[in-house]
Picture 1: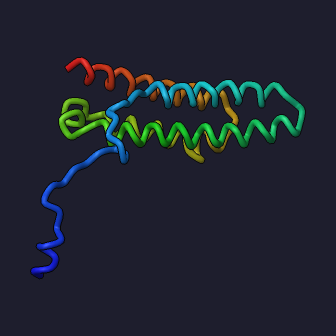
Picture 2: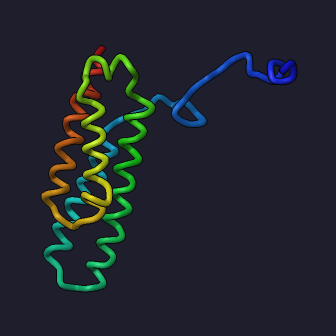
Length: 134
């Protein structure tokens, strides 16, 4: 008991990474989602099997990046006061990450799914920029 108290940190710090830069922007997720949409359109227009295979691989990588960027915003940027002011935020992030995941853009080469994902990211972006104004 004494040892645990002795070893307990006196100062507790938190940050979204090892270097708290404070730089957040939904544009990172949007750019990757735009890439997913463009890749899906090119995939649909091509009959070259090698191109289509490469397209799917790259599209899946971009979908993982979308999820990553959204999760950083959701878990690191937005705080409890934001969720109180914008109660739809949790649902928006859940819907957006699902649209980026295996049941959405990652698992399908449908430009319409990518467009839905872009719509959710735009809704998140509007709220994000509103919070930056306050």
